Image 1 (cartoon, rainbow, N blue to C red):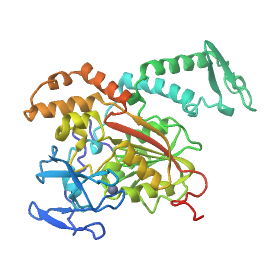
Image 2 (image 1 turned 30 degrees about the horizontal axis):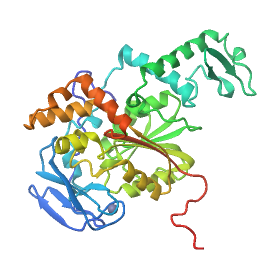
Image 3 (image 1 turned 60 degrees about the vertical axis):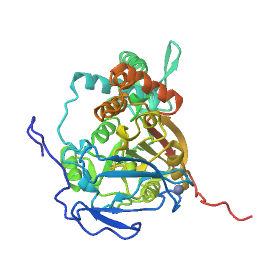
Length: 413
Ligand SMILES: [Zn+2]
């Protein structure tokens, strides 16, 4: 199944979906606006269950303009911020416009730059992140090049040396070594390594909220055995047809995702969109084998950009973003669902700084330093600085399902 090039292929709006009444459960209070099409619900703290909430900020929906202003509140007990009241799970699709980018199925050709970048990236992943060699060049025993200063040596662990399996490999090794060195230089910024995750053998990966499936295709190319999950059945069907990758429609927990079945679960720009983050994280832990990795990438509301731009901050994304994490609240959620935290990384994004500045200027904010932030290099310098200071507006947390049972409370003495 493919669409003619040059057309705006597929608009996976869910706008035709009939509206059902708001689900029971978390709904404490429901009011109807915009001709009964939008149902809002008020919910308690999604992290600690606290019933108190203090106002943090209010902003409109910059994509659809539906629904007036939405409020973000913060729990005085655990500091989690969430959109409250929020559109119910049954009507949230009204806020995803037809050209919503993650679901935009227009094909993009990687071009020669993209192809070269992939080559460089793969060399770095093999060298530094335990990835298998690419198809056709795989050798036994996990051959790796150890970097001993200017010296190169190839280690073989109980397998025939690669010279038996392949022609003399010095040219290939030298090429790989050069590519990996180049990768270190070229892709030195953290945001360029955003999607790199340590390889977890045997390499079964589930991407939650996979959208158009670009990440899955890349990871498959680098040696993972991938599956995806997306809320939209249309997206799931289309991506599965295009890529041959198995894509489940729906959310976690999911009947087709058995326990202990994945070595890694990834969630890029996904967890902040869900109504029940705790259930999703708990289901991800069950889906992982003991020792498996959960990698979560979300916007960080405890960031320089949020403080600087406030309601014009690009990543606020109301009301599609239902939860607004900080490093502390995301880690608390993961730990309380039985994960151990391996790493918390700040990722500065010059693009969101520039877009936020543009939005603030368009809204008539005093220009002060805003005009400067529209430019590429000043924005990049700020993004780098926020990364170093631990206040970037995007977070990546790598968490691990521990071996053995995890107690949620200490055993009685
Ligand atoms: Zn709370």
